[in-house]
Image (cartoon, rainbow, N blue to C red; front, side, top):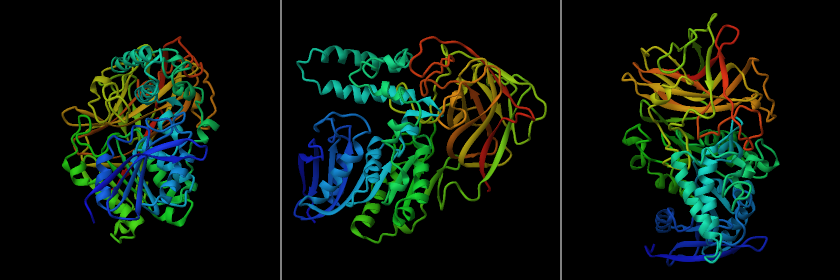
Amino acid sequence: MSKTVIVERNVEATMRDGVILRADVYRPDGVDKLPVLLQRTPYGKGAASVAFALMAAERGYVVVIQDTRGHWASDGEGYPLIYEMRDGYDTVEWAARQPWADGQVGMFGGSYVGYTQWAAAAMQPPALKAIVPGVTFCDPYSAYAYTGGALQAGVQISWGLTSEALLGIARLPDDDPRKGPWLEQLLDMADGLGTGATFKRLPMAEMPLIGREGITTLLYDVLAHPTRDEYWQQVACPHDRVQVPAFHMGGWYDIFTSNTLEDFTGIRANGATEVARAHQKALIGPWHHGLFMNPVGQADFGVRSGAPVVLPEELQFRWFDYWLKGIDNGIVDEPPLRIFVMGDNVWRDEQEWPLARTRYTPYYLHSGGAANSLHGDGALSPDGPAEESVDTYVYDPRNPVPTRGGGLCCSITALAPGAYDQRPVEERPDVLVYTTPSLTDDMEVTGPLVVHLWAATSAPDTDFTAKLVDVYPCGYARNVQDSILRARYRQGDGQARLVTPGEVYEYTIDLKATSNVFKAGHCIRLEISSSNFPQFDRNLNTGEPVGQGTAMRPATQTILHDSAHPSHIVLPVIPR
């Protein structure tokens, strides 16, 4: 096959409503018809995927990279999510009909570009045969909008400004009098991400550029839909609509960890075809939102964790070679799930998620009533509580607990993702710290994590946060996973119910999932607090609708851990 690659710029595809979208096409010279690998992106078709496109063309594929509607070279009014299903279907079928195509299409890419794959797959275009979605989601509501009822402020504000608002300004004509002032405002807002000032603006619904009067109303619209209503249902990609094999790629420190695993297991159980149900494959590494990178924050998981060993391009080519070219390379005979076990720092193949051999083990909170901070008396143990004093702290939204690592996006300065020493956070009196004694043996925790917390608050609404931490013998405290629950959504049915101040409720916090070996000599730690900002928005403790308030009030939080209120974390322990 010729090594010469022909590149065609701004090839036009007409959507069903007449809007023209434009793509760059990479194809090997001298070959009539080949399978197509398609990427639909809002980030500019001339960006990072060009290297992959050239590699794929040399391997015997036509690669089509298309700007999504209203972005860069494509026409129309762009808005996140809502056009991707029908435009995805139309583009897949358009690509399959081109003279250089053999009628088979695969899709690739990560993050929002992964969502465009799911959106197309949910519409069941006949030509789509396989996809490789990375660090992404089928359900936008739970992925990038709300967690436990709390707004994912970090991603909403940073992505809204640096992607959607920036693009809107860039597309204005140079003689538009709004362009210069808006650009200056955007630069000020971007600087404010790093200082935190932008995240602290109230009311959030009036956020410049992305709020009610913005060049895009993205943040305003998300705030107006805090529950899984029709706004979110129209852009969700149901698992039972997916007909194609998918190779999911994700990371333990990715913002979409839970979504990657839920989509993998959900389509295996409920996919629209036997082929889809039988051929979901997943790779989960110790990565944050930038795949295949090591170190991850302050943690070095070894050379085996990164791209030189994982070879992501080769994995994708093997997947597409099988499903689009019929090459029997054995990839579908391999175990469906490959995970990186942090702590041991090894890869391991598994047959299912969660692992069938899991022993779900409760570890209970204990203290003498003074678990506040790293220097308190909080303890964590598999022994159930007896009669114990409560722990209390004051959560003040004017001084929230700062985000320090974790699954974050999309400002590397303001929201640095990955693993970081949590001791600076644990010095605060509004962080309760519960720690086991040093482990005598290695303990593997692999699977979904859940915290059951009995608590009361002096406010009509507030938040409770949880964070699992691996404490090294030197004291270094590496965050493993974190999450949040908004009190008004404590019942999990999407209905907002304010709490009665002083009344005790059980709060169930979905702490997502991990795979981590707590080594002998290490300790297991659980942090409990009421803020993790700016990853999540501050609960102002007033009970007002999210995004509309400006008044803030402190709340006194009471955490119970006695025999009648056995607050605990359920650890998915894997026998060793």
